[in-house]
Length: 254
Image (cartoon, rainbow, N blue to C red; front, side):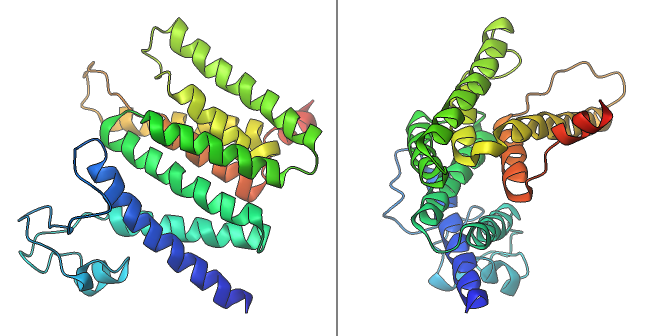
């Protein structure tokens, strides 16, 4: 039974991720994401229902559009697998509970924010507000007591304040101001894993940054803007689902 439920939640996450891909592509474009048929990005032909099945459509068509033969982006199946996997991990960690469905909603909004930031290097206010609200409710449901949740709120505020200060001190060159409320929502969501998640975010960002620098042409001095929201999301989720704590190494070494 648990395996069956896990598979159901994986499928649910994949379906929601597919919808989120449509939402992100149409948000702030004037197009409705609840109406209108999906179209091929290459030839603009309407896609049949068989081409819209998460993960399987990509595999059955071998990564090519049926209408014109153009190669399809891997981003859609990868995000579907990612959110499906996160839903499954959430169920394994939380079981069937109100907090589980709050986590599902928060993770879905988190994916929308990360995808939009990757595409446009901006975090939409409407999605941010929804994410912070959902994270606050989920964090409250997960907290063992009101005072534990209050402690999480204080830590989340301090982490967000640190990013806001980096934004103002660097005059927006180091990171955008929207990263501050974004990390506030992340910290509310993961609770005690907030500080480890914050550390992991910078470690992941540093590694990716070094890889980007290594691939740049030798002698190039042109700056490269990289959205920080994906690193924050990866770090906080890594800390939450693995419960790794980098501060243990500091305590051992001291």
